[in-house]
Image (cartoon, rainbow, N blue to C red; front, side, top):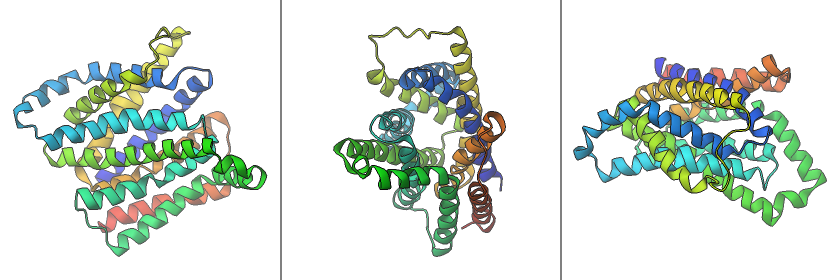
Length: 300
């Protein structure tokens, strides 16, 4: 049970991170700037991990380099930028709802790339977990239904299609990052080396997206403190726990455990921001917990 608990704990820290991140974005801070600062600090923080990885540079295969690009460049940088950018074209509730497709992408890629067996029993329990995750997002479903009824054109317009494309990029990118992170772990890379390569590659891929015409000086000095807290929570601690989990369990199980992130984010919003959970969301959380624990317990 240790592996899945590592990923679940990482999801808890990602949920705490959301309490800080979204208020910063709501205040008008450019999301790309925030992610850029995070990657810059984390690259320095994990630079010692790079020295460990450099010892194996002569052993690096083209497949390993590609895996780092998928984990850092695509998963950590491009997918994050694409998902954030989708909010310009879609109702955020719809973007968040479509993001629930990520486990399906990760499980499919794990079967194709890592040759992980996906039997009938796993698919049944994975479907149960996905159903629980959808129930957790019940308010987003209600908003989407409202759009269909009241403003259908917004759902099928050319602008919306761009948004769907951006969400698709983010879903595939994050799903691929899970699978290729597992592949690096199977190739013998330690978690600290994977994190070092992830953040460095992500930083490089983020450079074209940074608006260099603006000064990269944040308007409030406390914003730097908040970003450092996010670096500690979602970068150092959460990713450290996450890759310890990736090292121990199949990528398909990691994809299921990652679904705890939105659930924890909603729970924390309930406690700290007074945004009460509905009965449907609580039921969805119970289903998600039960289903994921059965998958790990039965080793499906």
